[in-house]
Picture 1 (cartoon, protein in one colour):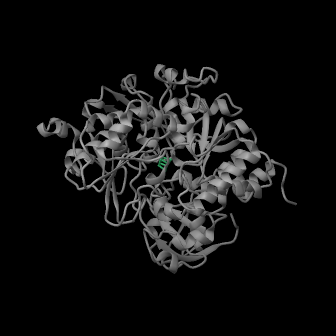
Picture 2 (cartoon, protein in one colour):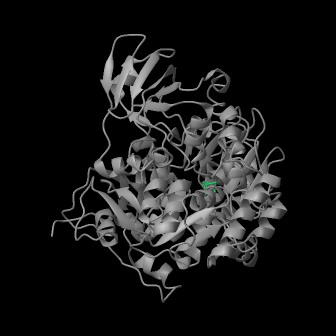
Picture 3 (cartoon, each protein chain N blue to C red):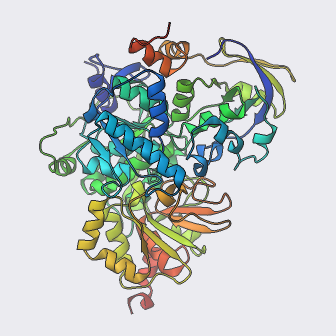
Length: 428
Length: 170
Ligand code: SF4
């Protein structure tokens, strides 16, 4: 048997072959198929047009209300309605209604719908997030989605792999987002186009699931088809919430062929910021500090998990949000919302002057709940800052992790959290 | 993909033309070509939608269509009247979506360098030959692997699945 990468192993197990090679075009069986309120309605139309009547397996489909919910206008309400009616008609088990729903890329893993070793597709480009669990998961379009519903398989080109080996430990106020921004800046927005990125190295002994989801989530920002983290004890611990679902804990063989290897030393990474209008325009926060910010968002499928809000809370202490700043916080799921209530973080944030948004993509996609006006400047913990993504085409968004975002919300200017916490006034 | 030749005026853009400029999310509450067409490329070139004529050709640099998975992007391009896109490279999901909906896309870096904005260009999607009718030059786009060609021959992924489901229209 030739040596295979993690990606090749997953494809081999989902096709009728013993081995697959980079560049092979394969028809592969799918374990989970995700759709959301923006992408499902078109798929429903395509599904009907192709003469399909029943989805291939009602357990392997997830339909999530997240992008424009709670419905931002009549059109959005109609999109959700199409998805809701389709879910009922087809008897889709994993349909997530507003109130029990949240951002898809947290909802699926939190409900035990993804196993290590799975092959997953989703009509959303950040479907690569589940690579954090050692699944191969990637984004598709609406026609793909309809076809996947009908036959339970799709065509893929088996991608080659860029390996990123991460060693060391994070310095204070540096986290998973800084690591992935650093990697994207080295690879470029098309540096890993059509490829899988495999993140490995000793550093992962100290990077927990919340951080892993952040890292895998942004692989697509380097053009990659997916980003995978080989499953280990930390993965097992997360999966132990779902004892009955199994999963395959695969790793690349020692002599598997990688297209390229990038070495990263965590000790060298500072708090980072990506300037408008590309996630790869990465600079140390020190070089952009002082830029005036109108709105800060902490949330999204990139940084909307417990670890992120704890990091923000630590920096904010009992300091108020700067009078000129709107701080919007978006916990990804209802479960997380309860967690934040229990830890009294919601109380802390609201007292400081933040607004807590329901779990929605909303502002991340410039849809609603925090869209920017002309010439406004935002600092978001989201994953994309393309022109016009978050509101008016002449608005601007800087991207960062929750530490820089929280520090910035307190001062109204892009702020290095290390300097803020050193400031004697900060602790008074 | 249609077999007849495509001919039109070129609208040339740079690298990294992302899906947020091809069709901004604020319009993605619709997926109908007629709603999307008038906003196609609006944040990059506000005159595109009003100037483009049926059959015109978009030429661009690297990583065309990067960003979101929205199929609204190739639909908007087709809806606006463009007959095909020639680029140095395409973002993966955009590439998939285009094949799946039958928007001809051609990877031809040399052609991109040899074609100027406003040129008249002819494309034969069957052979991948690109001819610049304004200047001099003819190029060959890389061909599709046979498995993809099968999908294209079935008229896109829908046709392919229809065949598989045994629902082939006779
Ligand atoms: S949170 Fe943002 S990036 Fe994530 S799925 Fe929603 S819109 Fe996409």
